[in-house]
Image 1: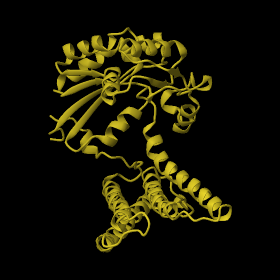
Image 2 (image 1 turned 90 degrees about the vertical axis):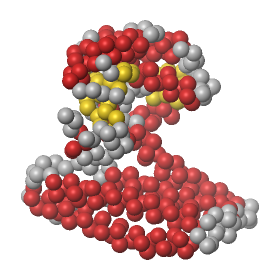
Image 3 (image 1 turned 60 degrees about the horizontal axis):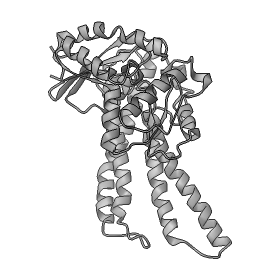
Image 4 (image 1 turned 180 degrees about the vertical axis):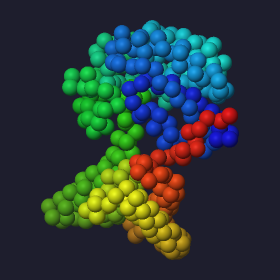
Length: 358
């Protein structure tokens, strides 16, 4: 039984798989997810109402199994009909499925309230008329929207799931957030989790670069040395390198040399992947005990200036090789079970986790 903790149902707009993939990435063991889609074309008020018209049919699909929660995963679609529209949709879900219902806009209100914020700046992939409805919805529930903006005219007619995270990031930077106490990126179909995961090491590395520039100015212009900043640079550089390596490994964006791999047939490529996954796992496993011993031993020492235990610094590498080893071991096992010729993708859920319990 894969749902020994909870069994969730997700009704997703038929525009792409981003929300499903995000759920699978973060669901803990013992929580299962089943999904279905509703037809979706365009996030205009009319297009959203047409999508919601299929909600009852989607709920009928979930009547066969008992769920802990059935969710309608569309932010704009669950608020487009008025101030209490999310509650109306929850009532429909609960009456048809017999399970507890939830909508994304309901979760947004609860999340903003839990954070204790009241002045959000909002960015969306919606046209202006839908943005205005969302503004009114949020302000009716006690939030003062300091600014709300779409992603630009070039993206109005593009599928939401095809919008690159880098473009969302650039538009967020351009958004006037003056007076805001939080940023709300609206739309569960946007791929924004990678922005957070990627830009943490980017921010750390940028901080390292800025501090190096400051140290150069202090040393060659002011004839002074900032020892605290030099030590902090070393720590942040190590953290940014390990986090960046973890991200590039998971997304397969690391440097590769496919000259031999691309010339192999499907069976040869499969064998190549199996061997490479096993070798990386074996390397991580071989380094684990020596690295642990080294980390424990270094706990006796502290940095000269900041007085930080070296165990904390070395633990970053321990975390890196542990998670990398697990990742490549899972890849190795999945490759062994994947038929030759079938494209293998690394995900944080096994195929069995997607099965519905009887």
